Length: 227
Figure 1 (cartoon, rainbow, N blue to C red):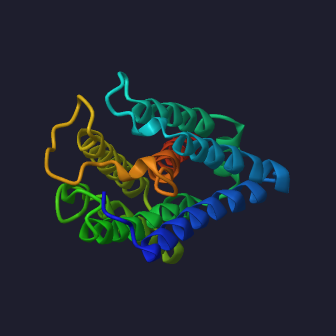
Figure 2 (tube, rainbow, N blue to C red; figure 1 turned 120 degrees about the vertical axis):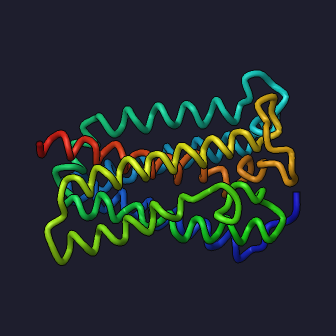
């Protein structure tokens, strides 16, 4: 794998910190103490960092691949967290425009993936130059945030955004899995999707992708609650 530029790493860490800050803000607005707001983030990010540091995530020939096991475990935990009291607290504390606008982080993330592709780290199919159109979800989030800020946002627009955003998320996750050097690989162009086994990029599948999923589940819960 090509060396990743320091600028790309700094931008990625800053994006992780921004998303973490948004979660912490929501928890605090929901009445959580500082410790209760920080503890989930420390555990979540720390566990992924320890897994990356152990080197086990690079063992792609194992069945099932440890990387997919880790990402799958995080996805299950994400859905569970969204349906827990934490998710309820965030739904009650935040306006729907913030639950949607939160997804705007997907725009700079996709720009960064495109840059990393140029650095020879990310396969082209994982960028908007290939088969990844997740940037659309981020742009829609910005548009709906502005709509809700200056006007009344209809339920159909919220539902349409959530379905489109979730479909785009499933698309890129599927492409990423099929680009890793496991028995499931279908995209054989180089580089393979291995950069996510190292810090800080292990937080892409275990935190940023989960944050997008978490946000979509919360919006579905909000739609059900407000029906």
